[in-house]
Image (cartoon, rainbow, N blue to C red):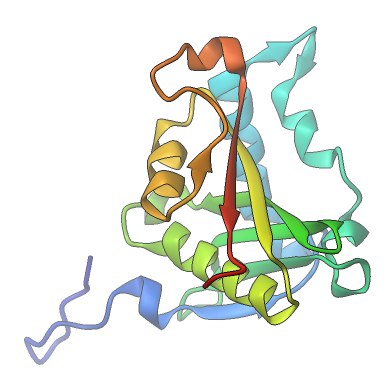
Length: 178
């Protein structure tokens, strides 16, 4: 999606004009985006054994998403400095990172921002010598499944099977040959 300019020409897509900021998961700048992600988890998945699904977001300490621990956390900021998308990874082992928290603000979807987040995360992982990327998404996030498949991630579950029975849908991508 492009925004028309006052001179009648077409502006560049938002995914090309955002600023990438590497920060921490507990940075106040990320709070609105993480808050919306939390609400959407709870709306899509409800309670799990009486516990809100959004508790998953606090499962890992913010430090795991810092360079000192082999991770990263990034935000995409629009021209006004507002976070419009973000994502992270944490180190699993010497060769593998797990991508987490890929999210686009609900008012900014369908503009290539999640794809840009993934490109930034993959590039950073590559700079660090990572060979394998893994991630999971939930059974009630078909748009995420479509994104990961379009980016060349191999599903670790039967695409034709019952996603609800699987629950966490795993993906893997070997980047050692890229």
